[in-house]
Amino acid sequence: METFEERIEALTGLSLTSSSNPSQENITTFLTDGAREVSIRISMLKPAESAKFTKTSEDNSNSGIELKGTLISAVREHDSASILRPCEEILPNDRYSATNPSSLKYRSKYNPGYYVLNGKIFCLPISSGSGNNGFLVTQTSMPDVFYNSVDIQDFPTDYVSLVTLYASCKALLSKLGALNGTLPSDLTIPDVPVLPVLDIANFDVVSDTTFALDDNNDLSIDLSFGNVNYDTLADIPQVPVFNKPVFNAPTFPTIENLVLPQPDILTVTPSFTTPDVASVNIVNQVPPIYTAPTISGVAELTGLDQLGTEDLIDVAGESTDFGKWFSTLGHFIEDEEDMELATAQIQKISTYIQAYTAQVQNNFNKFQEQTTAYQNEIQKEIQQAQINAQESQQEANLLLQKENQQYAAELNNYSAKISKYQAEVGAVIQAWQSDEYGVKFNEWTQDYNAKLQVYNVDLQAETARATNDFQLWNTEVQTSLQQFTSEAKADSDAEQTNATTLSANVNKLNANLQRYALETQKTTAANGERIQRYGAEVQTYTTEFGASLQNYQAKIEKIKTEYQWYFGQYQALMSEYNGSFGIQAQKQQGGQ
Figure 1 (cartoon, rainbow, N blue to C red):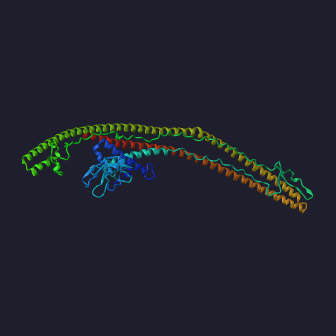
Figure 2: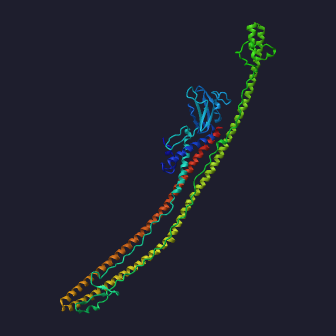
């Protein structure tokens, strides 16, 4: 047999765990509340069914019985399990006096009493397990129903399904409230790519040589060797300068943050009023008491235990003392042996007994009349109580219907606000993309690409110019060096050695120029890679932002769809739950 948890999951589509919302602990609370509400409402609609919601407990040790529901009856065994004496309620303050035989408040086995103290009910005389003197209490059952149970103890099977419906409705309400907390609070925007830093090729072309560059960037060469001063190299042209183009990247625009509107979320917590059953009461009626005819005198009419000479009728005034009639009759028969007087005395006694019997019948007839009147009054009160109960139930149904309609209106309003909020978010995002992010980012991209294109053109032109100038300069230097070398051959070996050193420095200078050209190419290639990688990052940023936006909108749409489904299921189950009580009311009216 399915547990309550499995039945509720089948009705609501929820997956219940110890940490879900609602949780298994919440389901236990909903089931327990539902069992109590169903018992109250069914008892109001069909009072004859109230006995099905009762539980009888027995106390045999004077430990008391916990009072959870409405007390139906309290009886005490009288030396037998088949003899049950009704207990009347007494005040807790009178519990001692009720055990004192000398007190007017004394309670015996024939008229036991009960009192309520600290949430428990006790009887007097106290209950005992020996001698069949137990205390039995019948009260409306208030069972604790757990999520993993399959049935409800002391609860009619016919109405268990209503408890499941009640708990299912409460679970759906809890789920609807929990959906508020699942709304995305903000749109996640990825980090904007950082503009790359471009390198500049810096290389010392006169490194490892004896040459130097003066303030005008002219090549300075010491041509004094020994005692001879050669002027042949004085006309060497100025060393060409590579004027690196300056790339002034445009400043990345300040894009205002995307500010989403705050959702106007309703608090979807219903408040349903439970009808006050205690407002339907039966007016207390005092039952009639049979009054036996009274006989004045010192003893009962049939009292024969006080026979003696003192009980004889000695004077005329004692002729009405019925306590002496039988002793006098015995005196006539046993002592006087006067049968005439004995016969007259017997006739006197017989006549009185006939009169007493007639009075007993008369009193009994009056008692019967009073009993009939009492029963008629009780029946009127019962009928009036049933009318009051029906009116109370109708008022409760109307109130519940009104509150249910109000709550349904609040839920519909909540759903409308979610749709409105979704539209507002979409409009704000679209406006931000078109007016803020799109415009500024596109303008910056176009400006950046244009300046980068100009920079690349200038860099290529300057590289070509510098390379050509270096080649021309190198040719002129080689020519001058050759002339200088040939003129220096006629000089001493020392000058020849200096010329060789000069030639080596020139070769180093040429090698440095080539290395500088290669470094410039590598730097240009690295800058190109950085720019290309930055473009890819911008594309990735655009893709991620679009995906984040779609995910945000999908979450809102998913929550909206879940909300509509759960709300529709709640309305269907609540309608079935309330409709079941309407059917019970129709059955009750048909039975009357």
